[in-house]
Image (cartoon, rainbow, N blue to C red; front, side, top):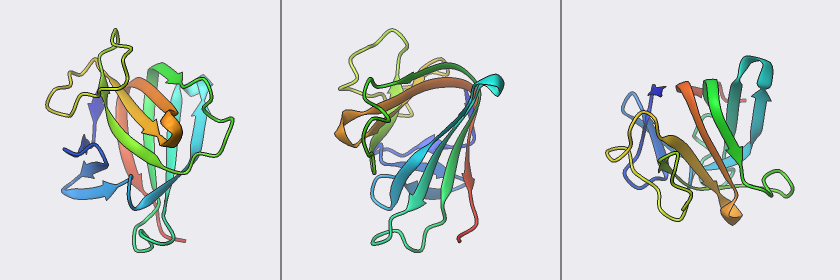
Length: 135
């Protein structure tokens, strides 16, 4: 997997071009856009109204998705926050422990743990973080 970003050491933020996007503390999770025909996924985050008001909205774009898994109850209740980000070896199903950026290999899955232990687990050819204009 090629990425335009790295996961921060604490598993709370994404770093792109020396800018840290603290998705755990400063952002709210908004939702997903999935285009199966194009094998394309987006995760949408908006700035938290209390803590992230100066932050821009961000999209995480995943192109040529070749593995995608949602936790069984993902999408059946409101999810507002991201707990942590890391990596998992494809064969490793114990999601209590995530690999950090230095431990991960290009074939490992990206793992986004949301509040309530819901998750998105994926692998793709290319991943990017896009900063959107503020409304």
